[in-house]
Length: 237
Image (cartoon, rainbow, N blue to C red; front, top):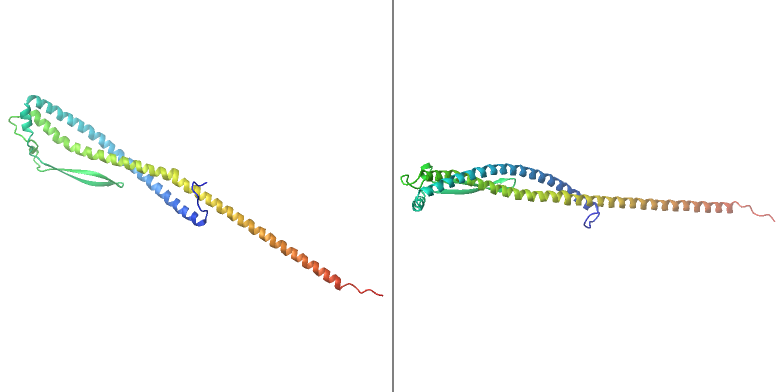
């Protein structure tokens, strides 16, 4: 039985069949979307794992070099060396559509293409470990930016996968079975009404036939009585 009260008419049956067809098509499209999102998500997760490992290694290398440089240089000299950077950075963000999900894309640009501009100090009074630390940080920065982009992409894809999964389950286990149950109920009601109409027509036909037979018998009986009265011979005195 359907969960809600419905009107068992042919118009309602046609409407429900159309909705069921649309729901089944939407269910297939959503399942395809979910599968493709899962494929994209797994690719992003694999890239995220590799990037995170590379970034952690680069940060550990930069941290180690900074630690050695801080041990070899005075805090004042270290602070003064890094106080005024020479290289400026511009960061732009655009969006890429992946299966109806807008994921960010970061674009990194430097004001100068000279690799020496990354060092904001002279080399005379600084240690080589500080150079190694700054170089390691400049190299890991691109990976850090890409890692932020990939992690945000994986977060957005996971949210979209969860929403799509809920919609697929709602259609597969709730909406489509409800419509199928309603269609079955209306079909049974219409068939029952059709059988009831057929039985009524048969009863009416039987009644008409019986009335016709009874009228025929009455006519025959009247005809016999009329013929018998006309054919009776007169009595002789």
